[in-house]
Length: 440
Ligand SMILES: Nc1ncnc2c1ncn2[C@@H]1O[C@H](COP(=O)(O)OP(=O)(O)OP(=O)(O)O)[C@@H](O)[C@H]1O
Ligand SMILES: [Mg+2]
Image 1 (tube, protein in one colour):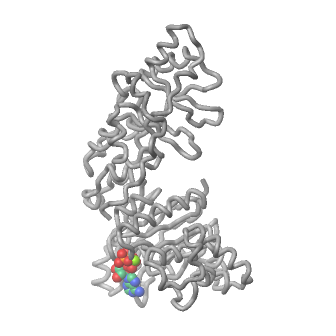
Image 2 (image 1 turned 120 degrees about the vertical axis):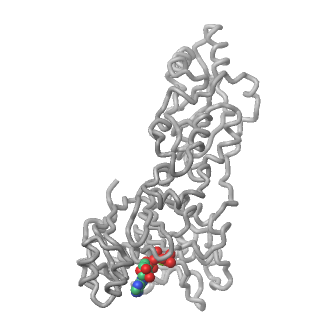
Image 3 (image 1 turned 60 degrees about the vertical axis):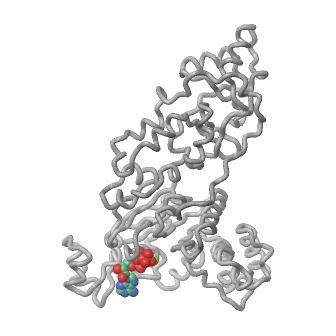
């Protein structure tokens, strides 16, 4: 994956003479409070460096005043950084002149704000198309692109209504549609969902994640809400007093907090609501529907010490599961073809399912298949791993070797074999739905 945005030593100091004594003191390692006391200058952002990869949702999280908004506004230069460089697609945007900057803001980046900033007396579609309109895009085209964007956020039918006809959540969707309509490949979202009440907010987060699967934008997402950060972030940077104190995946931040501050932050996190199936899955053992036999399947199961094996079709989609007793029966009769033993009633979850969504499924003792896009089998979660992962207590859990639980092969197998009557269940396993109630 290519780097889309690169921040190098970005510093922002507010005050009359930001590059003067305040910057000197900062370079000398003085803290924000001391610098303020001495110079009356405020350190907004202190020496922040990170890369945001193309197609990633990168979250910046921190308490109020930690410098999040300052930082994101440096990226489109609504705020001029005092020091450092910001590369967007290899262009150092701190060096752009006004017209170049304007061009970049119009075409490359779109910002979604906390307060949706809609024109109250203009229709929804006009609001969405506004950016394109002022850019001189002809009406037919901006209308068409706006409708498409409204369609993406589920508001096409509302195009000719006015903002006051819409709920807060819907207005935020309009804000998002406006950003999407520009086709910018970078979205800057500053507390975009923070004004929404928890349920709607949760819905928007899910919607963003769903949209992102297709759109693959590069998203810099600011929030002060830990739950939100962990839910939407591919990676999360934690800020404190203008500086970044840790960058990592939600899982890394929870299981290996860089310091006590981050650990404290994470103390209330319900691990089961953050860790995903993907995080604790192991590679699945499989056989091919066309190429393998009953005997192949049994050999692989013996080798891995497991009692179930997945059958893949030619396109790596899961066709079903084979269980040991059924295979052994076929083997005893000298059969080679296992198709009569394939069952469709195995537990499965999407790869981003949270651990708490796996609890019930895990009660059967069978491994849980982790299914990705287009039915592809991504891996398998062994029930024991779920509890192992949950057992790490926040802040102290870093002694745990996390690579072990990702790739471990030797433990956590479902023990005992599954008996054949479980096979009679209906073939359609309900897809677990994301729980909506949450501590937001
Ligand atoms: N225009 C300004 N002039 C002086 N100081 C400022 C200015 N804007 C922000 N600051 C200071 O810079 C620091 C970072 O503020 P910023 O708004 O970036 O924080 P934030 O993390 O976005 O907070 P919040 O969660 O409340 O939005 C704070 O100490 C703030 O007081
Ligand atoms: Mg802010």
